[in-house]
Length: 534
Image 1 (cartoon, rainbow, N blue to C red):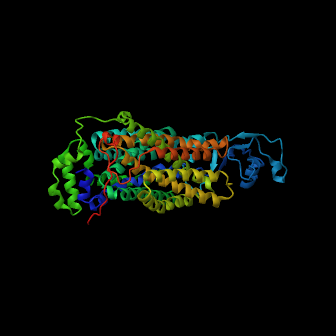
Image 2 (tube, rainbow, N blue to C red):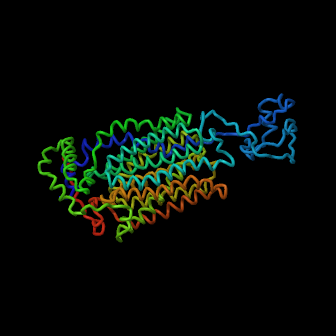
Image 3 (tube, helix red, strand yellow):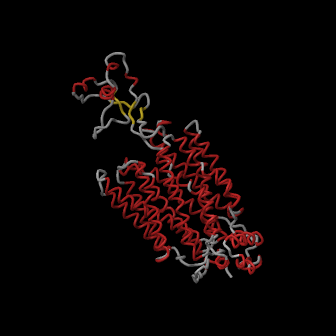
């Protein structure tokens, strides 16, 4: 009897699993809030140079506010005020409609004046991250994702060594601590450092929670449970939109979106450890304890009479002794090495394109809140479609189709001018939906591809590669200064390339989860699906 058969006997998706998912939801809804927070926290409001230095106690002081701007700040081709330049001295002839071709321009001398009608304060207004310093605004997102990139393999390794449950608590506590410290930062440097550690801590929640959830589900319910789990991201996305609409100060926004972690810390006591991990560590007594609790909660107590610690150990089949697995083991044998390389490339493409679209919501010609709401709302029906796609055509072809569709949508938008914002937004929403589908698929796909003994290492490694792409993604938007279509063209090329690489991965539909590295060096065993009697 394999462990998947044990789970099926005690109901692989019952009240026990629902309780587990709901507890995990408290922490998982904070992930999109932080990962997409820069859309609001780093928003750039309309601004122009502070012209108070031009006050001369004479004519200038008697002008109306409109006239002062007229004689002090040049206009762009579209008629808007320049954001980064001002006249060296007032051009009073502009009051009579005369334009001087010899007027000299200078950079803003005394800072900027910001339009606070939409946001009370953002990172940009706090530390003047505009004009020559605008790259520093993108860098805050990059540094955050570098933290996620480093945290993913670290927490993956530690959770494979010390267990899922303990490391989740560490992630909860550290994420809450560093997020609150970020909100009370007194300087730009302090803020970026705190965001780095926040990202590193949140990586633990991201990769450990989904693995723990899927490891408690039987084969016949694995696809359904994975899609249900992914809805946490959609709920968090909608939550971020609502909170950001009502909380317009970046410090308070950061505190509010982090607050669900307080509930997660209190609810942690009811989280079970992964029975799969316990068996991989030969801790059959503890595994039996949680299996018995699962059977009792799912009203399958009679089944536990035939399941003993000994039979659980036998379900693991292979004796690995006291071997400690690391990321290095992902590259030791031929099949797992191919898996590590290909899955890493696919993860890079999925994350790079998803955040390339998600962190550029200001570029579609709509209100920030409306665009974010549309993006989030489209995720729900898309994930329903993902469920049927995974069940009917499998993981590999679904992953390929999603990534290639993202590339196609990005390619179309290159040729749609910005004044046609309705068409751009429709195509962008379709592309965003497909990129969200690719993310939903890749999490389940990766968990099914990697063996239990290195599953968290595998998730940590692939998340590391993915966050490498994410950390670069915000900076790619700066390439529009070189060629306005270069960011979209880059995203398109990455999506198509990673979609083609996905064709090299194995299909995992209806196969048993591998427990040891040797399991993927031989053909996968198909599972006979059966109805679970409630």
